[in-house]
Every structure is written in structure tokens, then in C-alpha cells.
Image 1 (cartoon, one colour):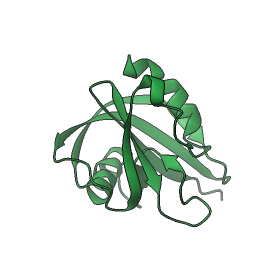
Image 2 (image 1 turned 45 degrees about the vertical axis):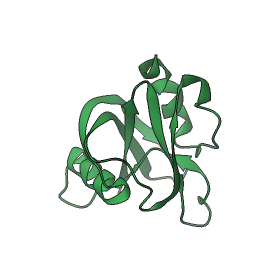
Image 3 (image 1 turned 90 degrees about the vertical axis):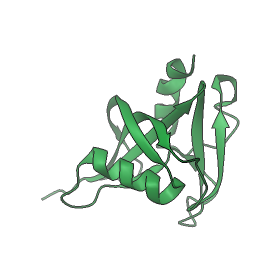
Image 4 (image 1 turned 30 degrees about the horizontal axis):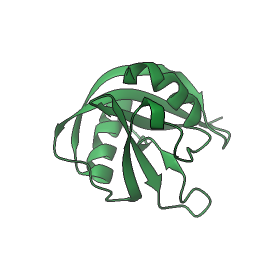
Length: 130
């Protein structure tokens, strides 16, 4: 039986800018930039996992506003990324589990070194920042 690991990501957009988070670990991904999020726990819905992850990683409460694409394959075979646009409804993002956070406008989207799995999603998000 093949088990597919579901990873969820939040495209948090505020004032036409996308929140990017710089990975602290594991070592092979450290320094790369990603959308905030993480793995879905057993018995947890994708949406609940994403709300939980953003609270744990950023200290914020979010509201999901729409799904971006379908399943985005990740380089480590057997994992897919599922992404939602979101807005912050409580709190201000802090890098609780990341090295840094940055708000990126459309012209700045590629100023950071996105992880390969997030890059196609970032390309798809450009229209949401206009």
C-alpha cells in the first residue's frame, strides 16, 4: 500500500503581499523559503491542519479563503502539497519556527530562494497579488 503524505501550505496575503517563511530545519532545506504550513496529522482535515500549523509556526489565527490548484507534487516521492489562500484574523506573524519571515509583493516574489516544491505554487499565486 502506498501512503501519500499530505503537506498543507498557506498563501497568506495582506495588502497585495504574500507571506514567505525561511526554513530553519531540516539541514537540507534550511535557508530555503516556503509557504507556512506542515504535515496533516492522522484524523485531521487538511483545513484544520493548516489553521493549527499557522498558529504553531506564526502565532496567528487564519481564515482560509480559497484553494490554489490541486495536489502539487513534492520532490520527495510520496508527498503532495495542498495550498489555500488565507488571511490573518488574529495576531501578527512571528518567526516562531522559521529563521525569518518576509512580505513579498508581486515584483519581489522571486527575491528569495523558494524551495522547489513551493515555486510552482508561487508562480500560480502571482495573479492574487495584483
